[in-house]
Image (cartoon, rainbow, N blue to C red):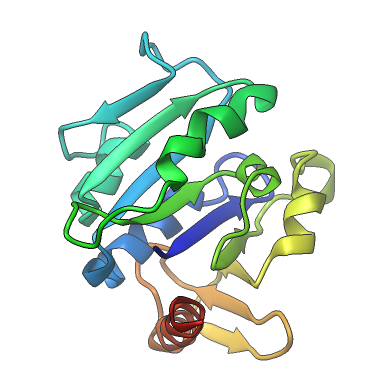
Length: 184
């Protein structure tokens, strides 16, 4: 099972756009996309499954991008581990969407993903409190820019003109990383 976490420096930086770009670019992984939030979204259950693709919500956008399943987990931080544990149980490969992509900073307190990508786009004063911890776990940084580009290094920085369109260089880097983690 591949697990990717998309975190970010704040609200509105493009976490959902990047998750959708990854889903669309890596369709062979048959993703279950999971948005984790502490904000009420009007759903009576703490884990709610989206069934309609579209643009009206983040979970609908996941389905529109090609996710096989899209879940919204509304939970307080102290309950998160218990709430997502069933999603992390090993699944048979023939089951639908055996791979997970989480949009969350706080999930990193409960799992070690194969890949953690962090979207940075908020000035220091507006950053989420959880951002510092996410930075410690980030495998790569991603930011909006006028054009696609890559700054190599221990923790590469990918610049994307459109977060929903993953550059070939970034896609190659992700595939190598996932393949390496899945084979080990």
